[in-house]
Length: 498
Figure 1 (tube, rainbow, N blue to C red):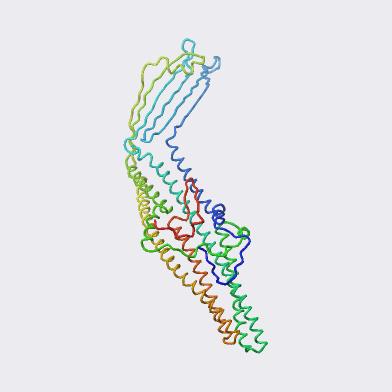
Figure 2: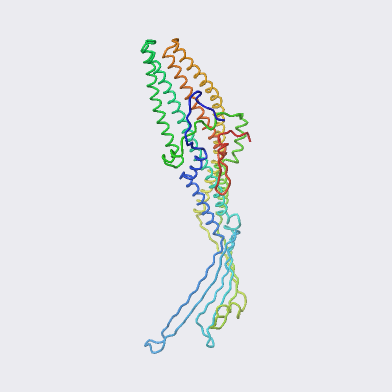
């Protein structure tokens, strides 16, 4: 609901009015802090890909060729012995979530031996396994880094939405201050014009000897003071424009090009009943909507994973290694020399098996990791508990403030109406000679004070509504894929109790 703040004061609409949607859209596009927050999210996605790479299949292809000449005598009377060798291998390696590392290897080797005038090539096919038995055993341990990276993406996404909400709140708060400053300037200018008219009328009465000149001096002093107030209001407007430009990430010239502020505040009253039940209901709902709280929940879950990982990391390393395969032999100088050694002259299966035990007696590294994990977990629990308390206090404070401001706004609206009526009556009495310039000046100041209080209270009310929306997580609606919407039509309306 919009109301005219100034009673009988005339408001001239600007040709171009800056809208809430413009403020939000320009802030999202131009504010550098939103861009930084989005890049933090992209960084976490990169960290996830790095963590996932430990479970990727790695392929390796190698090929070698060599030639050597060995002398047969000291006097070089005999030709040197020439030896040519070549080999190639194809291998793959992959770690599965349980911790097992599987490495198949295929290779062909030509040692330069000649049997019956034909070079021989040997081939081998092997599969090696490495299985942790103590540290490194199990899906929970091996996927810890990947799960933490997944949680970090979720956390950073919610951090991005909360940062966007905070920066949009800052921009909209500056927008409300801009509206208030512009309305205040109009109040001061209208009041100055009214006082100037009063001085003009009293000057005429002094010239007619209808009132003493001392009455005129009172009105002139009042006008001089009001001109100072108008100048201060102009300065406040310029400051609010600069603050808005900073909050949006624009230059002052770009903000001014968008147009003037509207002639009225977006919100001035509400029919919603605000009580303790309303506050408690929105606190419970905010636990599902506040993006900073949801981000902290994910961070706490990540700390629990790190705690379990550090506990299992206290175990020594005991790895079982096992390999099985075969060797083959083939004689040829044709193309088949590169693949027939795998299936020719295979005498039987080969295998190897072994255990590797690794331990650091002092365990400084492992103990240090454990201490860090415990500290992070304790800090995450404390942050979550503190944030819950902070959100509850913020929402309660917002509700109390809105409730007060709604009542105060109703009272000040009546004060504006009565002060305006009293001022008009006092001017009529002055014209009839039943009042003094001092009384008129007193009524003018009373009316001006009422208008200023009205402007200030409704500004605070709009600011309080924005704070409530931000603190309950309803300022913006996250739509997924790093996108969100802001409903400007509902932005300054108190929502029903959830």
